[in-house]
View 1 (cartoon, rainbow, N blue to C red):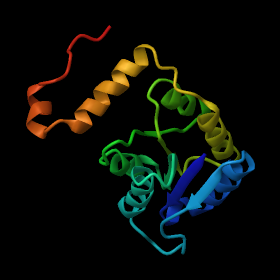
View 2: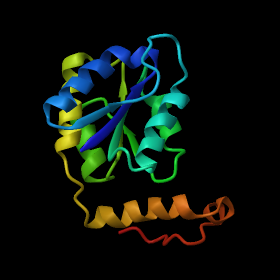
View 3: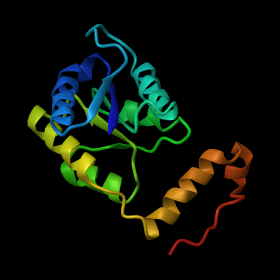
View 4: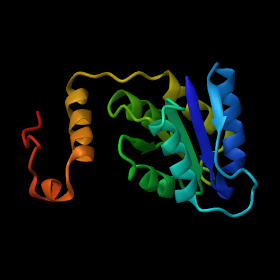
Length: 162
């Protein structure tokens, strides 16, 4: 699988560790964005990864900033992206099995190297369960495709959630 990965300056150390972990699992890691170590803005790095996914150059992405929160917010602004912040292996697994997340966001400040490796491994090895979760992911996709006023009015969404 092709994985695009980027970070801001605060996530660079963890980016190197996670890149090696993904490569060791047999994935093609596409290091994109600014890797100079100079201060850079996380929305710019998120855009590079999300565009790589949208363009079909990557199947999934990994984004790392200080907290992971900014990357997650920025990534989720892109159509077709389902980014999730994972601070442990369980949240990584659930983001894949329940939400079919295609971008993993990590905290360079809060996640150590060993934990980061385990999170990335768990995320990559977990499949989407489908079933009742598929309907919910389809609703997220529908929101992507709707006009803002349709979302605000609730038009096109089935309010029944079983």
